[in-house]
Image (cartoon, rainbow, N blue to C red; front, side):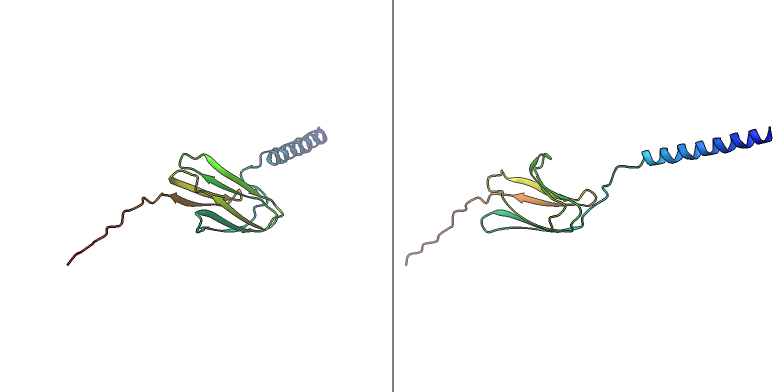
Amino acid sequence: MKTLFKSLLVAFTLTVVTFSTSWAESNKPIGKPKNAAAFQSSLYTTAEGKLQIALDKQTGGSVVVRLKNSAGTDLFIQQIGKRQQVARMRLDVSALPDGVYQVVISNGVETTTQELTLATQQPSATARLVAFN
């Protein structure tokens, strides 16, 4: 009887350990990707009114560049691949209506957001003063 009880106790313990280990493996959190590439970015406008985006990143992970309007709609999406280290993009924003836009750059873990405001300058009439003596 003692031998039967010990063998059942060992079998039950092994079953519980095996089940808990398999349960822990199948319920891992899925939130963050394993390979997140570090990146550096810069944005500036050119004299022609175009938006220049420069991106330097590490290999091993992808980075996504998005241009969004104020409603949150994506106007431009570009994914930089895992093996690419440098990306230079020039976007023509002259056809876009006036408003506030966002440039969002993300590697899945870290996200940077830059605001872009487009405003058309109204032509102003120059005041001219003419004097006679």
